Image (cartoon, rainbow, N blue to C red; front, side, top):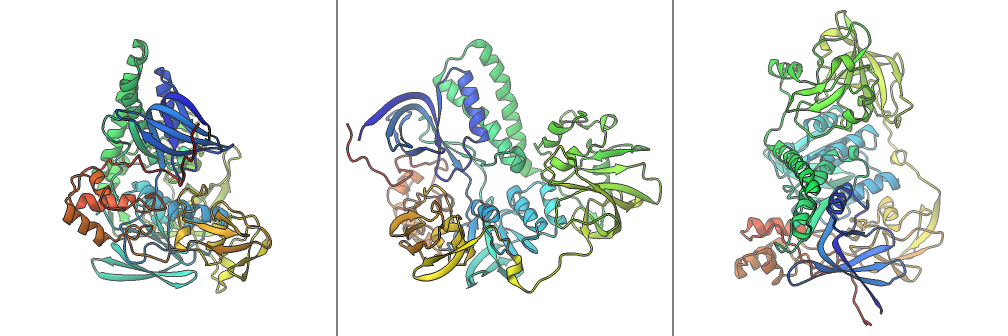
Length: 636
């Protein structure tokens, strides 16, 4: 095998399972490093697979990359940034490693690519923004009639107040407790037991989705210290509005990380340094504000169904709330009282009526607002509403965003909802409209509201409801023609052209091996034999007459590391007997996280458990462990 050599200052690598490349954070990082005169390269994506990193003695590493023609490249980099997707699993409990519990990334693939039955209940583990938004989307699309978010680590909901508001207005519920048992009742029905302050809750669910967070976000991790070898988890969102919180964190952390690299590797000109110092200071301030938000959460307080006097005072003093309504025309009210970093509405406002600067107490410029409704349509949390008129008569018109289908029609009666989803009173739909310049997914409705409830009503609920059905087949969303295949000698009808891993979930034959659904085969778990050839289920498309056999089939498990078969008890026993000082020392005496999936399933869990037992080193990363199964047979 011939080796092709190269050199570079900063090698930014796409880690296993990373679907979006380059990420938003990578773009910011590479721009700042390039402006400072560093040679920066991206490695990953279609046709360029990163195979491993071989650390050098002092700093930097050799990066092994395979191109589309299977040629191997050896790149000497002074610094390596390994970019990983976020993947969250809870601490192990009985039955956790099974097709009944899937990560968010797999759930979203099944939502967009599959025809899976999500009725009637879905449990989401975690209460972060992504968990609350996923729950709201399931309810708005009526794929599930009940969604429960379970907070098992923290004493408070971890998501923004605006995302919690959207979730609860759609009928979502939040409970605090720990999952203890997950068991299968049928191919499409699971039972989860959750222990809370009142005892054990038993919930029958279509699926459990693990989203998190289950630990504090530590940002990027340089290990060993001073080596310039960094592991960094990034959001896979292609648009900021799809994952606002994490993308903003990534962008600001990219500024701080680029500062570390520039100080260690470059001698930038003086004019760049002064300009970058200002960018760095601003980035650190934004990071500090975002990371401290968890210590100053906001929530509305109520007296019965109505806002309490304290909350009303906060609402009317907030800069996003208009202080005087217009006699004629529409005026927005944007009630993001919590000090979040999102500025999506500001960027799209054509009248420049939104200027968000919380330190200067600037938000909505009332006399510039034209009532166009753009802010209502782009807000990822659906917070803004518009008020028409001064609200002096018996009824006032509110304009509310609405994404559910089917939508109410002009003249329909609707239930008007408070910020926590309680029906306050009935109202009537006066009109609806879509702006052709935006994506058209959010409908804006003019609704007649009693004037004394103008500051209470923030959502609506169609009173006719969704028709119930006793036929589970009606819950499926068919996407394409079906064809016949053989799975272990049994005939099954699945959709032509879909990935085998998706098909196995649809027909109730998914294995624990299939829950990561990598699409690049990086975990190595979902191996099958397709027409006599070994392949990965996540990379193999269905075709007519296909013969599928399982070559690797893990049973459902409660183990900490299912690939190697190490339990939590065995990890704790090893820590008690060896007393390792660091995670690196622990990894030398026990193979936890070193199985087939390379720690994708268990790394966060075993690190958290080890730290709880007194082992130091939260930034540990085993660079010597390859990202895939590969070897160099011959070098020339």
